[in-house]
Length: 497
Ligand code: NAP
Image (cartoon, rainbow, N blue to C red; front, side, top):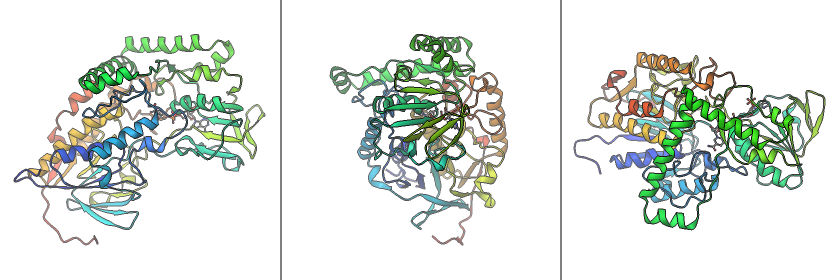
């Protein structure tokens, strides 16, 4: 309901994944009705719509990986499978009337800022104007293909894990997997169950922590249905446990790091019997330097007779398969690229042009950064969800998104009260925030001698280096002296709408 005297802004939300759905719900709750949601694909769900590879799951406990206002008694396991997470988002989208409002198959190709308005052009050739843009395009959604000689010459079936080809029969096939990250650890055991042979091409070994994936009984679910508060209790317990262990372990807390290191090393030693295989699977860097993998299927799967861990390094790819540096040809029918994502693209390749005609590529030319991960100084009235330095060691991105959403709503609330027409973070605030982040990075595990998707071109982790509690505290209220605000005269627009 629009409160008397308050302005009702028009808001364009780009992306109908987890954070776009959340933002729509929260804006509406605040009484904002003029919302346009643009989604490039034909369904909501973001990551969970895109990633349908066998074994896809979330390695954050399911009861923690839910919106705080929408607990889910139906989770089948402690770590939910991708399909049930997708169902969850679809259910929430329907329940809150989000899905019916999404403009599907309509990507934003061009956004230009002028005089307190965003002028947006979509892939369908539509022109829209809004007071605010919320960019909810996610972090890991641009698949990265490896730069390996001959990749395109491979004559078998080849696809990235985020673009799984479900038409390809896997039974009895010779399958190659490049990569050993969180995705690979989930997909490889499923492939080993079906394939004739699975060759895993490992460039760098990974630390893996084993947390049993408990199945929830009907009795559990009934109890949660009858008393939803129990789910909040469980969620808070998981959140506390993760915050106190994994999150602290990677952000410079020695005791927690030691504990997690012991878990990982114990898991490796007790799970892998063969000493030479164990040696190959032993990383040379500190646990948590790359994102810690929580998994309890990979180590047993890689010891199956039809599994082969190849560590010789890839020389090139041919029509028949992969030739490793020792000259051996590994003949393959299917090649799976579990090679991760380009994490610094964010909303790009959108043609995003801010104040005074400055392009996002220019703004981010030297470094991809955003004040409080959300605001980019030259892009007024533009909020980036899950922007650079949002991720907090192995914590739920839903919880992060909820905190960011509240922060954005507080800024929009001031616009509604007429405190300004235009708001942007000051360059000074941006630089100070960046210095503050940098100061915390030295003690983190991410700079512990490995290469990972966390690191930008300068070798700086695009992560939050302090604790979750610290982040929540600092995000509780926007510091208004860090923002530049303006009133803008209404202006005849020269842009067609
Ligand atoms: P990733 O962690 O970036 O792993 C990519 C893998 O591909 C690495 O093993 C990398 O080797 C390898 N690789 C890349 N290029 C290569 C090349 N040219 N030759 C050989 N190997 C190459 O990607 P991901 O596994 O897709 O995971 C990305 C992130 O997604 C995770 O860190 C996590 O945040 C998220 N995720 C979460 C879940 C969950 O359950 N919550 C599940 C899956 C993914 P190097 O290590 O040597 O670079």
